[in-house]
Length: 142
Image 1 (tube, rainbow, N blue to C red):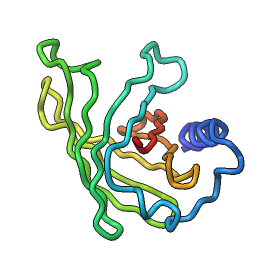
Image 2 (cartoon, rainbow, N blue to C red; image 1 turned 30 degrees about the horizontal axis):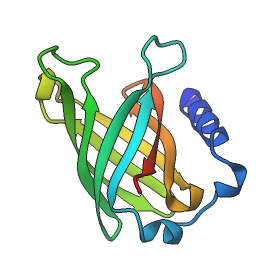
Image 3 (cartoon, rainbow, N blue to C red; image 1 turned 135 degrees about the vertical axis):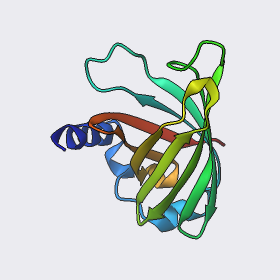
Image 4 (tube, helix red, strand yellow; image 1 turned 135 degrees about the horizontal axis):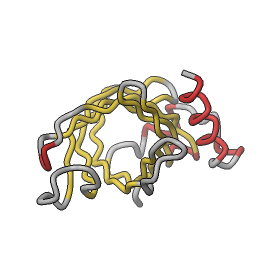
């Protein structure tokens, strides 16, 4: 829990102070569409940040979609990994589960929680698998 909190605080420090505290309303008009981001592993891990693209669909407070990322840990024959997303948005908090679809031999799930900032254009937060916690950020493509 302390590690998760530390990652969230560090992620918040990467965002300009004027951008914090934006409401869901500022995010509502442009939330659907393509988002580009990075996720990273816990401090001390040797892996570089992993880029991803999230094609997000929104219906009221429900979020769904598909994530594409380069294959950094699956079977070498797969160039990319793909995951289906299901979650929700409450206030300025976005929560979703990313479940890999089996490409590259990967089919596990990852929980994500992020805060909507930067006038609704950015989400910053953490991901978790069991006791492993890392960070992520994503930005709405123009």
